[in-house]
Image 1: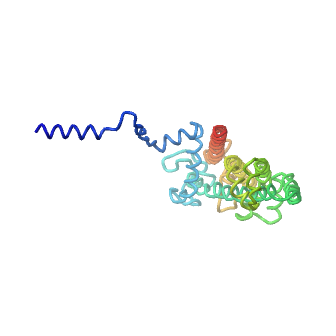
Image 2: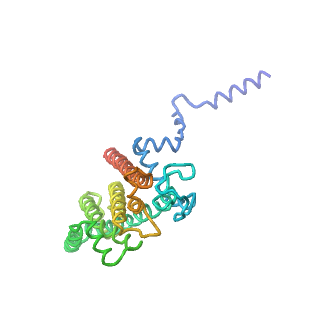
Image 3: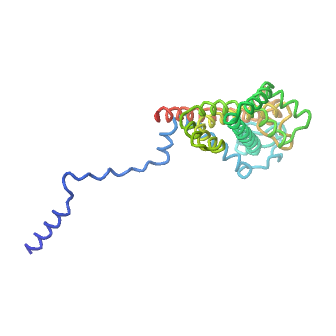
Length: 309
């Protein structure tokens, strides 16, 4: 028995690591998704993220969860107030406003998102081309987009829609066309600054082609500023499309976006009807949410850039 104990003690003694051996690193504690979001965004940024995700979700599932069909006449009371049957009241024809807003979200958010993606992608592409190409290409593209940006966006939209009529594809094209020049100027300015940095000069000295330099060396370093610019352009396009709809030149009946809902229920403004207030609140919450989110992204990008230096 003593021999077994001695053998076991000897085994334990030899199993112990030497005193000067490096200690194992402390176990990595996995943080929750919420904690990582808190670390990435400020409180206001989280609020903005929640609002944006909420309206994006509503744009996809709004018609499915709407209590009534968008154009269904559900009440004999016009400009009705909040009630159990109609949570956001009724409009000027007795239709459920909650359903109208849920159906209209897919036009307001969907059209603005598609137009913003088109404007940002096209503007960024031409901005990169202008920055990495020769002087004459840069001059031609810059003068062309300077001419386009000199035309106010609302004037351009009114002229084009008056000439060709209002339709979903036309609204998307006009909104994208109005904001491509701004995306071009931002992306070109960023790309021109990046092209002067040392790692880009090294890539040129290695004989890398312009497409490689633009795709690998320049574009990844423009992501944070371009995301902030994307958010701003989304807000501008939401307001542009809502303004056109308020003037009767946007989404046409029987469909409606939030701007159309404000216009058609403007008669209830004097009595404070929810039918005119709720679409305006929806526009306000979306624009405020996007602004809070992009401000948080901009600060995070600035901290990351400063920490890497």
